[in-house]
Amino acid sequence: MSVVEIERGDGVMVVRMNRPDRLNALGAELRAQLAAAWIEFRDSRDLEVAIFTGTGRAFCAGEDMKESVEREKTGEAMAARRRDDDIYRAGSLEKPVIVAVNGFAMGGGFHLVERADLRVAVRGAVFESSEAKRWLLGGYDHGHKGGLSHAAATELAFAFRFTAERLHQLGWINRVVEADQLMPTAREMATHLLTLPPACRVNTLIMMRAMRAEVPDNLERLASRLRDHGAKSDLLESRKAFVEKRRPRFKGWDNPQDRYNTPHLEE
Image 1 (cartoon, rainbow, N blue to C red):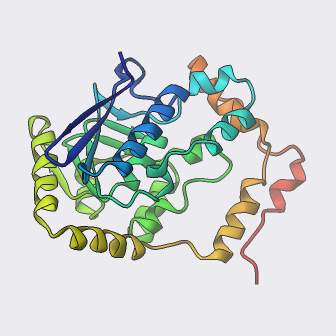
Image 2: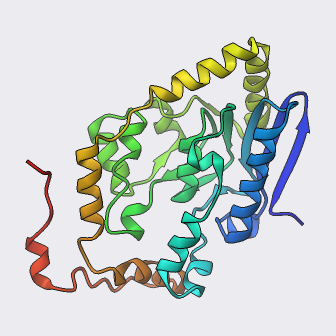
């Protein structure tokens, strides 16, 4: 059984993560097959719109924590992600993608939803930007890029969970539907896109993506410094605790005095 199932027809490619026993967690095999699927989609002359979804009760639970811990070194896991050639996640795929969220979208799964051009979700789907639980800096950029208010973006950055209904109210999700209408709605949206003149579809996609908010360089520099502020051992500890189903024992800072030397925005 493949961990990624693909359907092709009528100009549409359906990419379905198929690892329901692991809540479609992003292990090495799933990442590699997704990367290959997006390359096929990019290179196809017959497929112009993609629908991205999952099987089971989750769209994607994010990073495969068990696999990450088995590597023993968080640095190795991070290196594997850096070597990932997934053009969808890189934002270089110049064809529209509609994400159909069938359930939980957590951590890396939230990122996959965020990358899509149009978003449809089932009622009751749960979303979480999980960086604050796993790294030394919360997901500061997601709410900014998604056009959320500062209050909502702050809540998102601190890994509070959001329902599909609330994200729809905030304008982050295009449609919220019953479970049996998820794929029909996504296919209706794909059909509409295919009725547009091809150049219009491509040009409008590029324009809308160009209008997405970006984090200013000075804030990215601050983020880089903050990612190094704290005990790096806590990165792996968060994963071990998750896998072992226990409360994490965080160190905080290797040097306790660092607690009072937090980097701030440059003058």
